[in-house]
Image (cartoon, rainbow, N blue to C red; front, side, top):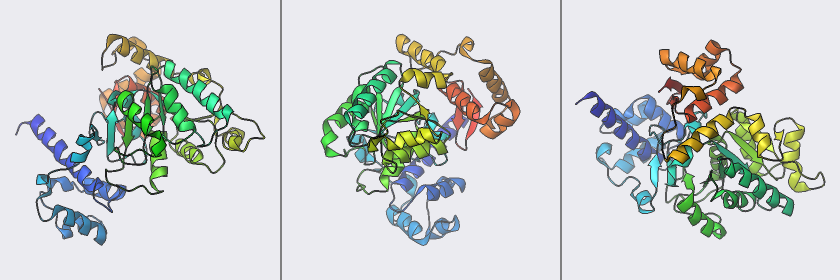
Length: 383
């Protein structure tokens, strides 16, 4: 087998293994990680002893063996056939379409089910989240901000919930940047049901994504998992309205833990709906904003990235222009290091002396410009 053909075969088998395990009840993120670390895809048949030997629990091993029903797993058929029936696709971190931003988080989803415009996964995105029962002020603020964000070319990401999420999707749907809805449910299921019309519009004109396999019943634990994807998929999160213990504040916490930017729209001190964003601003965790210009001022690398995508849109191309003149001195320095060898962000931090938070933005910008690529294991390499 030729080298390229062999690499393709390994990719396909490893990918199928990930999907098989992800869609097996009782198998979580760490179990899949163990299977990958032990290169379990190289085995054509998994015995119970094989699975126990890599550190899986008895019930997990039995669940996997039971699913395979004694056949070599690489010959199993019908993986995610139901996904194709709803015009969706399956992505793993080893697929080029998998979003670069998600590769950077501590536990990126092993599998994403996606339906719609996959190219939106590669554009700079801003999350907009808030209460399910907004005030008139909250609805107006969210709509006005999102229209500005989308007009500037930023993709707006939210969770298809009632209230602020819905307003964000509606305001961005037909804008330049488009919108991504991250679902807690499977890709064929809309929650809440009242958003079914919006769900279908996003599938047609935007993008729906989820890590929940088809056929999985909805349970409360899926919502914080959804919120982590919203935060991880974007360069920053905006909180519009929300109580101190609301789901939007969980998304905000994820953004902070991921070293992503956090913004908040202030509200009246007398409004319980504004307690969440006001408190984030008061504690210095979120930057106060009133419009898209405040976000762009904070992310000084963003205009250049948006210019790249504006050029792509004008040319009708799927590849960013590789024009060295668009690079900053810091970006050229990083590329020079990576041309010698692939490096982690910690190694780049030591070599470049660029502050860690700013370095993260530089690396994300270079990924957007397709100058570098984040590989599995959080290693960057030059393209």
